[in-house]
Each structure stands twice: as structure tokens, then as C-alpha cells.
Length: 117
Image 1 (cartoon, helix red, strand yellow):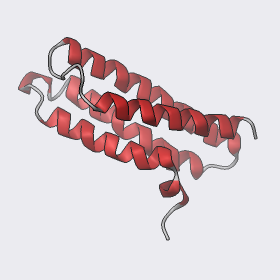
Image 2: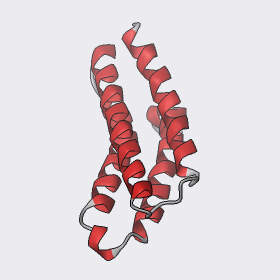
Image 3: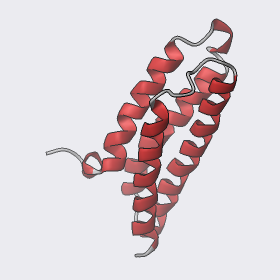
Image 4: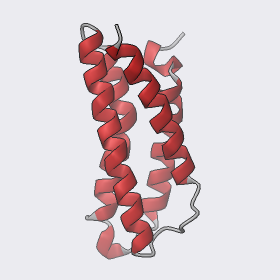
């Protein structure tokens, strides 16, 4: 049947976002592999990871807190993607931006749900 968080669209879309980030950073310049690329991967992984962590906690307030952490990681990821574009490591029109926006909308919806309970 699966775990409850695996049914959430935010988690479902967050996982391909992580995969895309890993694909992008795999071709990063050598000098960035331990810098921007690694930081970008950590931020991306944090997004879907915080959804089940929050779900495993007791109560809506804690769940909302972990969704908030995921949203913060998404904001961090957005900045790192902008830096990658600025440095010419990522095309301005790369589709990862649309995926990140979609995850952001889903996380915002989840956060609203758990902060109004």
C-alpha cells in the first residue's frame, strides 16, 4: 500500500525534482562539485525528506514546521539555481524551474492545511 507521505503530490513531485538536480549537478564543472553542486543537492534532498519527517511527528503544528523547513530548502534551491544560471552552468530556460514552482505551490497548500488545524 505504501506510506501516507508517498500519496502526497508534494512528495511525488519533489522526488523527480531531486533526480533532476542530481542530473544537472552531475555535469557541473569539476571546481563546483564540492561547492555549489553539493549544496544544491543537499537543498533538493531536504525538500521531500522533510515531508515524511513532519508526518511522523505528533500534531499539526510539528507537521507544519517541517513543511516550512521544506519550503525554506526550496527557496535555497531556487537561489542556487539562479546562481548556476548566472555563472552559465544552467540554461536560463531549463525546465527544472517549472518543477520547482510546482513543488512550491504544493508545499504552500500543505502548509496552509496544517496551520489551519
